[in-house]
Image (tube, rainbow, N blue to C red):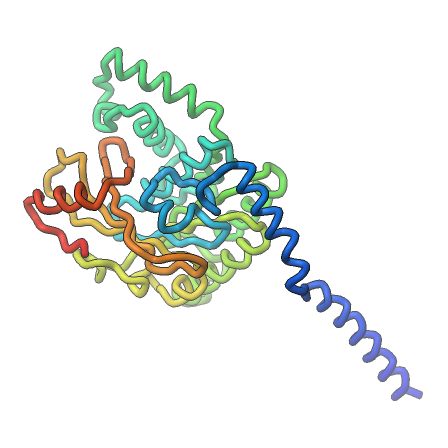
Length: 319
């Protein structure tokens, strides 16, 4: 009868659905082997961190290295979020890991100049002016040799199209073996469905990045800008522009904070990297020193940090 045929069809569909659903169900016992394999890999690498060394000790200590997660790095405009992201990418690449850096704002050439200035220790202002000494040129040539073989891919031709970024992420990981992805930055990402309100687009972008990180199983760091309301105050997770989705989806949120610099000749600017959310680890403050002439962040001690803050003409509200 028709009823029996429909019933048989429903039973068959149910069996298909059940078999599909079974693929996603694992027992805790099945998780033991990959966990032990990860532990053995860390022992073999003799790394002090469970994650990737980002080259900044104070930040490594809090994060236990960059984890295989969806991390969000936020700051107000011109505070150094791109510089910190590039510092991290550069150090990871120097350790032999393949890194992809999506630059939606700066060209690959501009980022390369920053790399040369950082690695070579050449003042970026002198670099731009062309008033270089013989010693400067020697430093630049030495830096170029290091950069030449660095497994760092800079992608600046996406025009911010999110669908293209996602497609290239899949290609980079599956075909080129990329192990870490940086996307700089969220405000410049163009979502395909323009009929949605911008906050809805951000929500979709954040959710899809979270899914992409799980799919590709590599760390993804998204750089984001904070709202103007965060100016002059210690930033909070809620200061992330259109923050709802980012705040909810990201496994780890790092917020940069420092005062606006009045003295443009200052190359020692105390900066806090505030780990405001860390789903699988600790939160806290990493005390850093920003060296704008080299677009470089380095770790400093609490005493050194406080001395620099006390000596400033304008006392910033750092804590």
